[in-house]
Length: 583
Image (cartoon, rainbow, N blue to C red; front, side, top):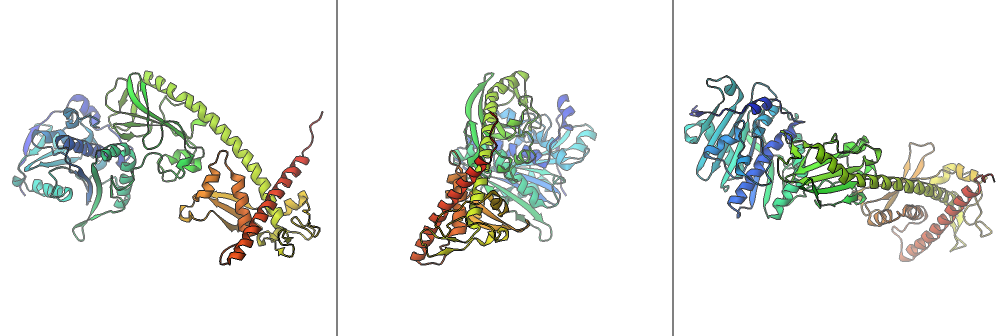
């Protein structure tokens, strides 16, 4: 095999050598972000050189244990190719590209070292083309540390003289497409060692991370009418073919880009203190730095989706923290920042700070680009920006808690009113000759000594005693969110885990009517459960004639009125049984 490389010596600076092997990542996702950053920066440079280019591609390929990442952005040929793999070099920094990510010049090699998972072995090859020109540069850790002279990189600008160069260039062009004017490929030997056993799981995790962490960056590209596609491929050794994981692949113009709050279960439950949805940041200036600020709050832990990356803090009731969006990319949450105000009321509060640029005197980023480092002065100023909103969140939380307590008391009365209404056979008010049977679900708790609680023979409502209500099997009320049943406002089921079995009235927030009642100010929780109970237990219109349906609607109205009446009786009974205060 021909390997006619030129060996070039590129000595790294002392500080790069000290930090190269000490850079750490929280997982393979943040490490791969290094290459996503470089690919997006390459696409931005291609757009600057040729504004007419509007279609780009980034592909992730696993071949055996090797990882390949290619993009159709601006190619780095000639002397530029060394900047991709050489320690201490940063093509992004030297290009002066605005809103770029790379700054330190050790990201690609350090990330590869982490992905390989071996302290003494790391081989990264960069292959690029631009028109008819092509270049290759290879970083081999073992060669750099042990060769004479040390820190030697393999460079080539003529692929016909090297079989390895030819094969890698062919792979690059295969995935970016024959119509691409330029492209870059990063080949990491053993770069998939930290992936889970099932490759598709890694692809899906990386895809979701891109859609969340790069959401604002992708939105900016979409506003420039740029179409960027992400593809994920795995080599099938049995058939010697590459297969795409369709469930992970997505396009920035056809698939929804995930704003941090757009994919929660109930976005309507978010309370905004600063900014709003769809990257609506409120402009603020902190120590002379132009920033964007959003502050939002979820009122209940359960309102977060289990797949929501921010959801774990809610489910375990841990402080959620602060997120920074640097140059359009979301940086890992810095929950431990001294900017945070440690009190229980901020647990559901989410603070986001957006800014552009690098190396601000008070606002920096660590070498892994996974955490923002604040000066003490900036932390103090930032804390002032959010302190008032934390106080407002605490007050809002307390008010919500008080409202919930009132609602629960109201629901208890309604449950008793429903039980009182449907526990016995009763006569219809609208048709005195008709007898309405009691609801079957309440039969298990009725007693022979119970008085009629609806319309007796005298035509008057007889009051049930407190013991009657305690003996009745009160229903359970539940609010569910079932989009798959969005045309069903409420339903009835039986909880067989109770003894005796207990009836459950469920109202579906996914139905517009129910959502409108629950989201009203104040929430009309009592009204929605009263309506659901009256309809589910009192009437049925399925398969009936127009006249029968009219009668059922009339019965529904009658039943609703009686539930309300018995609910009021329950309230009065509770009030009359309270001991009076001593004078």
